[in-house]
Length: 207
Picture 1 (cartoon, rainbow, N blue to C red):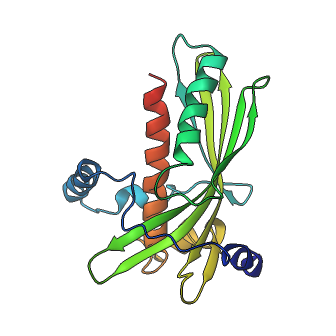
Picture 2 (cartoon, rainbow, N blue to C red; picture 1 turned 45 degrees about the vertical axis):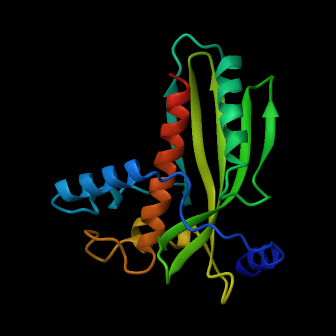
Picture 3 (cartoon, rainbow, N blue to C red; picture 1 turned 30 degrees about the vertical axis):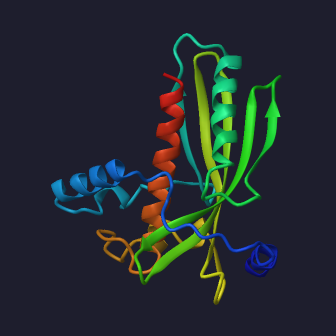
């Protein structure tokens, strides 16, 4: 799988993205403020924060859309996911795979830069790949984030990881599970932040 992912990715042109476009200054300040208020600033990212279903990392949530039909929910979420594929940090492989007006299901694949650190001297980032599935209903939508992969340091020495082997409680935390792991912890933290951002954005458009 690792060799396959690397082979697929290496033909893609370099994209210069110095920060996560979804992380505004206000959001970053809020996260830092919340972290300072906690006894353990990593608390949000500790045991249980990365759920596994049948051995796979999968996040799911049900968003409420009071008074909206399944078609209205489908239209709103479809427009948002389509807009996401065109954001600055996205690769050309980001696209809507399925948009079924009968079942009101939408499936979208994303490939984007996930930035860990950006300074004048250092740009530390990974390519993040994942799939979003939206099952739209009258008054609600079930949202799933799954099939999460990373391609790290691809300009020099490409390293590919699945979420299952890199950000689970076993891999993404220290042995006592009271801190993020030294290397994979940054992947776990930023992936959770990105998941929260996507779910919150979709929730807001359904209000």
